[in-house]
Each structure stands twice: as structure tokens, then as C-alpha cells.
Length: 282
Image (cartoon, rainbow, N blue to C red; front, side):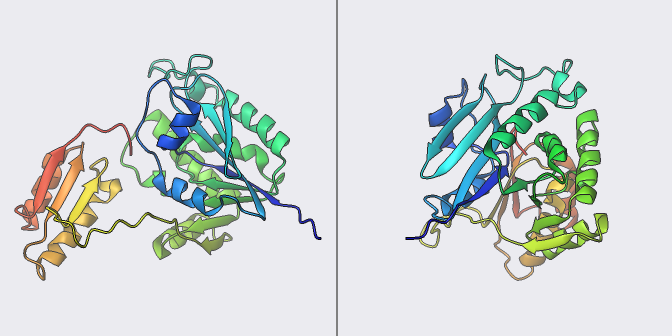
């Protein structure tokens, strides 16, 4: 009989789903965030060789929440005002002003307790990543790129701070996961010595072949250039030359009139349908 020590892996990520919220019971329910993380977690359930600890922040909880399910250990830290779990008002962002001190201290304590063999951080474009600096040269760190905040057209103090931090992390660490050749090239532009490892995120496949549909393509999110809406409109323009009946539905908020004019210039205004929705997600 052989006893093999499990590899301890910590994920830093931002996600939630209905199952998580049933367990931690936030004061207010929120929509699913980063469903690719939920799909990826399922691959490691009941794994004989890996002990996975998933660490995330969560809205509308006042204190640290922990639970275990199918061999996965979930750790949730409250995002917002300590003790009451409500959002920071825009005029009083103490978390930002203190450099996310409480988050970094909590992370340090939890990581010391877990003592992982490797830390895997999903994304460098959000404020949650402020805590990773302190683990440089203390643990092996692998960072998967989910997107680049530096490409955002938004210009606020917090966004600009996130852009600065993204650049610092890309230059400080060496091992990165990516999904596309473009991502790989852009990482190398920031850090020529970076080690790149391709890996995808699993997605749930829904059978739509036998279902009646109104649109061929649906865009859901913030309707801005950095979210790719112009690229999508140009792609539909190309496809419309071969598929005259192609239909695109754009759901979200933003300067829709600007993009409607672009659709008109591309001569696809009759192929694009716009649904205005105020979003609080990316």
C-alpha cells in the first residue's frame, strides 16, 4: 500500500454561482460570476492527487465563510465594509486608500495556514490581485490571464490603479497561462522572459441544434470598444456577405448610439438588434 501526499493547490479567483450562495447565504443574491471557474472546479472534484483550495471574495457577506464539497475547500472573504459586508460608497473607499490592507493581511494568514505547494491566480485585472505581491519568492505562483484591464477605455482612479498593478504583476512574475496566440504575444510584450503555458477553460455545451432561435449571435455585457463590440460588428459584416439572414442581438449598456452608427456604416443595421440593459457586471 502506497500513501501519496496530495499536491496542495490554491486558486485566487473571483466567482460565484447559485450553489455557492446556498452555502454561504449572502444577504442579497447576485448573478453567476465567471462560470468558467465553476466548470473548471468540477474537473478537480474528488481528485485523488490534488487538494484544491478555492479562495474568492464575495459581495453581501459580513465575515469569512468556509465549506467543503466533494473534496474542494471553498474560502470566501467579504468584499466591502468589514463586519457589515455592505459596499463601500464611492466617496469612502477605505479599502482602496489603504492599499487593500485587510485583504492582504487576511490572505497572508490563510495562505500560511494552508501552506500550498503552488498558488494559481486567475486574472490580473481586478483589485483582488493586490494580495499576490506578498507571495513572490515565497511560493510558486502561476497566473492565468483572463483579460487585460489596460485595454479598458474607462479612466478612473481605481481603474488606473488596476492598470498599473496589472503591468507590475506581468513584469514581476514569470509563469502565465493563456488561451489565444494574441494573449501570448501581449504577455511577451510586457515581459519578454515570461514562460507561457496554454490552457483552456471548460464550458458547458448546450444542445441548440433542434431549438428554434431568433438570433444567430448574442452579445451580453458592457457595450464598449474594449469588450470587443466593434470587432464583433465587423465580423458580422463579413459574415453577412455569405449569410444574408444573419442576426445579432446586443444586450447591455453603454454608448449604443455610437455603435449603431458603426453598424450603419458597415451596412448591417438591419441585422443587429439592440436591447438596453443597465449592467453591474463586466
